[in-house]
Image (cartoon, rainbow, N blue to C red; front, side, top):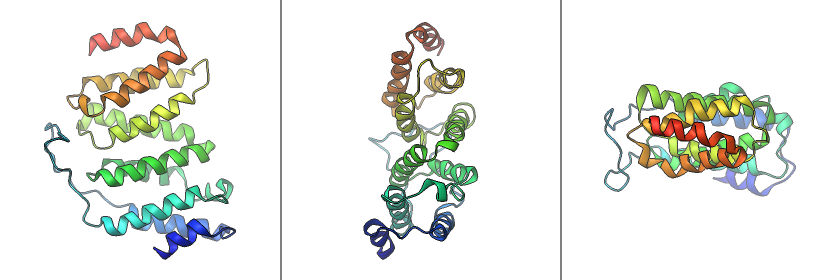
Amino acid sequence: MELVDFVANKSGIFTPLIYKEISEMISINLFRPLPPRLNPLGAQFDPEEDEPILEDAWPHIQIVYELFLKFLEAPDFNPTYAKHYFSKSFVSNLIYLFGCEDPRERDYLKMILHRIYGKFLSIRSFIRKSIKNALLEFIYEFDIPNGIYELLEILGSIINGFSIPLKEEHVNFLMDALLPLHRSKSLPLYHSQLSFCIIQYIQKDKNLTYPIIKKLFKY
């Protein structure tokens, strides 16, 4: 807690060594195998009826997330130093954690991944591909919606920043990963975020309206 306060309120402390030490501290404390998902495969989680399964170690983990967030938001944070430690494998481990059961942890992950996307231009494409892979895994393998709501909230902001005309990669993301999300029985849990993403696409390119509606009828 003292470290969180120190990072939040001191300036000029981020030497190259600090980036290395903080990235290692985050990795050691957060990156871990997640326990088996206790909601049975195929059983839809109902936020009005079912209680989320909370992380026993949350009092400790929360402080690590808080330090991570303050670190990324610090005025003198330097992405040039940080990019050597916040690598693709680091981001992959971060996205894996979206599969956790505790919504408090997923909320921190959403804020942190969004800030990483904003600060590290060189790995933006990799982050989009990693999110796409997580969505495809949900659609075609597990159908357990942990993290889908949060990832779609991040995507809503990412899609808003796409330049016009849309790149083929971005259109493929819509067709291959976003529209098939309508086939899941968990759709009500993330439908508003998904709709927001798709509306953003139509606002960017109205020619996508027909193929989108055609796919929606299919699902």
